[in-house]
Image 1: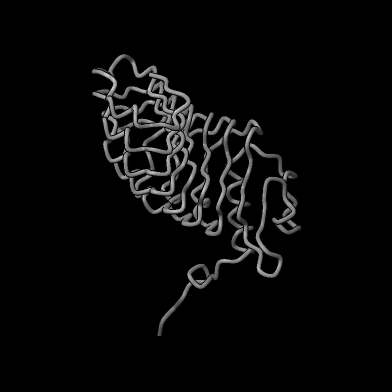
Image 2 (image 1 turned 120 degrees about the horizontal axis):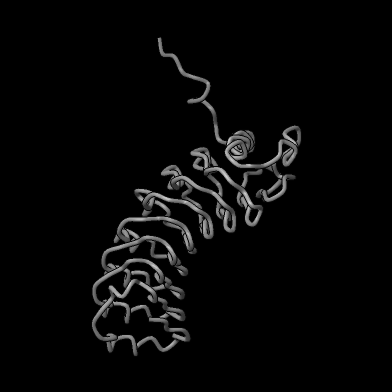
Length: 232
């Protein structure tokens, strides 16, 4: 005889999305009336769903609401999410590792909060990611070289954190990158000449790294013909 729990047999649907959203809300400083739990989550503020025949939550935008609290691990249950916007709040705690379950995620913006800890492990699982913005938090540790596997990235903004160590040369694998901002951290070492391989780069900011970046500007930077902003 085999026993299966109800939870393990649950098929992801708009109902499981709704349950996840309710758990996510419970971690935030939102009033009980912010979402009407008796209605469809597709009608909720900050929530966008896909087609009406079999809707799933594809966008969660709770930016600029002055939220406090932490990001629930239930965020990883929103398996159809392609955009997560939680910027300009006062969220704290670590970025939950469950976020890497969001295989369809294209835009992840957690900027201007008070999030700490290191980068979630296995970030390479977010293969569809195009925008990654962790600006102005308290994220620490070395810049993961595994970020170079996110080959669809166009914007990588990790400025104003506590990132240390050298700039991985493997970043040159991000051939679609237009914006790279690693300023106001504690990065050290020389500027890798491999940055000159990012031919679509328009904005490059490595400024205010506590005078730990040294050496000359690589001549390969002159290959960046689309570059309009260079801040060292």
